[in-house]
Amino acid sequence: MSALNLRQIEVFRATMLAGSVSEAARLLHVSQPGVSRMLAHMELRLGLTLFERRKGRLLPTPEAQALFGEVQQVYGGVQRIQDCAEALKTGEHLALRVVASPSVMLELVPLAVTALTREYPAARLYLETLTVAEMTRQMVARQADVAISTVRLDEAALAQQRLGGWTLVCAFPRGHRFEAQKSVSLKDVVAEPLVAFAPETTQGRFVDGWCDQHDVRLAAPIQVRSGLNACALVACGAGVAVVDDLTARAYPSDRLGFRPVRGAPSAEILSVTQGQAATSALGRRFMALVGRQLATLKPARR
Image (cartoon, rainbow, N blue to C red; front, side, top):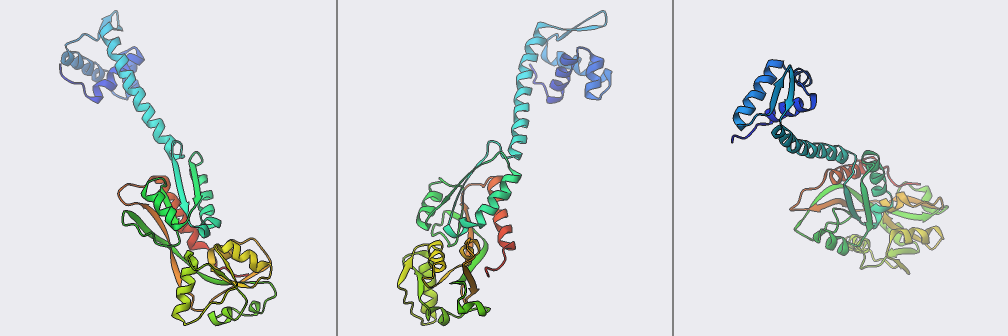
């Protein structure tokens, strides 16, 4: 028995649904003789009689009914595929697990996620703030799909792409003498009572390395592990702090002022994905939106 091609199956199905050759031809936008020839050719190839012609009527045989049942199952599967493809456009059936550094989770990632949900309203999104070590572990174990990190992860199996950068600013309480300046120097900062990052933190290592390059020693009576804690202390009058501009921009207080620190180094903001696996459309769009948000952020200054 020869196999049927897709066009023959389509003509057979249309004829079964329409109940006549003329109506099937109308549905398929072809000529009536063309449908008749196609059906005759099918019967010849299959060695089966599919229809009986009685007084101008087309009657499907039991063989045709059995074949039609199989054809309908195939078309049902095709329709389900089409429905699934349409649903995926809105994010249905899709999930994205995002892990991120603390500073980018304050404003940058939430802005990108908000924009993403407008484009994919049915998608499920899972967000978590992690340390560099835990972020690396989850990405390597494929427990997360995308990471947005303020430092490069030390893992060759991961693909990392620069989305933008961050730098350092000085946070001070309102009314401080720094308000009168457009920017401050590192020496200006260390001359003040200082709230600093613990040396084992990512930002602590970053700031300490910068100070070492300028032969400046930080003497900070208060040490913290997050930019939010530093800003909270500064807002209460505990001193000044050097924090990343992402935290400065997102900190919700009118009791703080920020100024650029002259000569401050910059660092990368990176998207991290699996090196040996493709990223979903949802993940790619999320990363693009993070990059777009970075490009539109204004300098942190109050």
